[in-house]
Amino acid sequence: MGYQRSLAVLGLAAALLAGCRKEDAGVKPVITLLRPADGFALTVPDTLEVELDVYGEDRVDRVLVSVLNADGVPVLPVLAVTPASNPARLTLPLAITNETLPSGTYRVQAEARAGDASARDEAAMVVTAAPLRLRHIMVLTRPAPDQFGVLRIDSLGNVMNVNTVLADLNGAGVSSAGQAFLTIGPFTGPLTAYTSNGTGVRWVRPNQSNAGLPWFTSLDLCSDGFAHVGSTDGSVRAYNVSSGAVSSIATLQSGYRSTRCTVVGQRLVIAQNAVAGPQHLLRVCQSPGGAYVTDHALDLDVVRMDARTNDLVLVYGNRNGEGVVQERSVASGGGWEPRTWPSPITAVERADAGSWIVALANGSLERFTYANAASLTIGSGSPVQDLAMDPVSGLMYAVRGQELAAFDPQSGVAGTTWALGAEGAYVLPVLNR
Figure 1: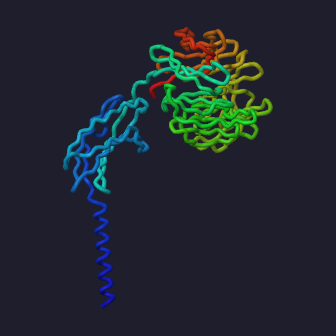
Figure 2: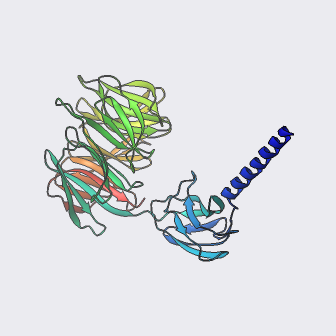
Figure 3: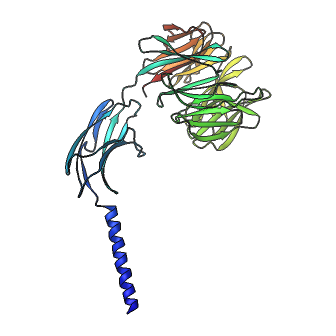
C-alpha cells in the first residue's frame, strides 16, 4: 500500500511539474506576414512597407522585423514594436538606404514574442543594389618623413584637408564594401582603419617595431574582402575591415618579408623578399585559412599582382633596372613573360578585364594589353607614385609629385588636376559599395 501511495505522489508531482513547464513556455502567438509577398522586388534606396497580423492568447510583448542575407545575418537594424491591441494589424515602414547592400535575394522575417514563446513568418525579397557611384576620393600625402596628410576631394572636385597623422606611411588601401580605408607604417605607423571620409577611426592595431626593424611590410585589400597585412614576425594576417578581427594567419618563409598579396581562386599568393640578400619567393597558401601549400622561385621585386584566372596570376615587378610582367601558374609555378619595359615599374592599376596601366620610373605611362602582349605609351611626365581606377566614370587617377591628375586610360587624354600641397603618396577612390 505504501508503495502504491509513493507512486501516486510521484505521478502527481510529475504532472504538476509538466504543468509548470507548459505554463512557463506559454502559448505561441500567431503572426502572418501580409506584405511583402514572396518575390517582391526592391531597388536601393527605397522604403519597404511591411504589413502583418499578430495575435496572442494572452498578449504579444513585441514584434521584430528583420531583413536577413543568405547567411541569416541581419543587414539592417532590427525594427522592434509593441502592438497597441490584441489582435493587431501593423503597417511598418522600413527604410532600406544602405548602398553597400549587393544585389541578391534577402528574407524579410517577422517575429512575434509572448513571454518565452515566439512565432515567425517570412518572405523572400529580391534586392537590386543602388547604382554604383563615386562618393569621394581620398588622397594621402607625405608632408614630412614621420607624418602624412589626409585629403578628401568631394563630388564637386573641392579639396579638403581632413587630417594630419603623426606616423610614417608605407601602405594604404580602400574597401568600398566596408566603407573604410586602411594605412600602415614601417616604424611608427599603426595599422589603422579609418571611416571612409577620413574623419574617424574604426580600429587600430599597434606597430611593434623595435631595434630599428620595420614592423608592417605590406597591405593589400583582396577580392576575398579582407585586408591582408604582412609583418616582420613572419606572418600575413587577414583582417576583417569592419571589426579588425583576424580571420586567418599565413606564415612566411623564414628570413623573408611580404611585399604584396593577392587571392587567386582558392589560393593566397604572397610575394616575399629576403631580409638579407636579393632573393625573392612566391608563397602559395590556402584561401581562406592561410595553410601553407608551396613556394615558387621568383626573380622580381614585386610591385603588384592580379589574378587572371583561378590558377594564373600576373606578377608585375622589377629586375635589373627593367620593368617586367610575368604570368605564373599558382599550382605549378611555371609561366612566361609577356612584356618587359626599359625602366622600373613604380605603379600598376587594372583598367579593365584585359588591360593594365603601368607607370614607369622614367615617367612613361603604358597601357599593357594581355591579349597581344602589347604596350602602348599613352602619357609621360614626372614619375607616378600611385594609380587608382574609378569604374563609374572610367577615369584613372595618378599621383605625380604634388599633384593628382585624372586621365582616360584608353587614350591617355588628361582631365582635371588637383594641387595637393605636399608630395602625394596614395589615391583611394571611395565608391558607395
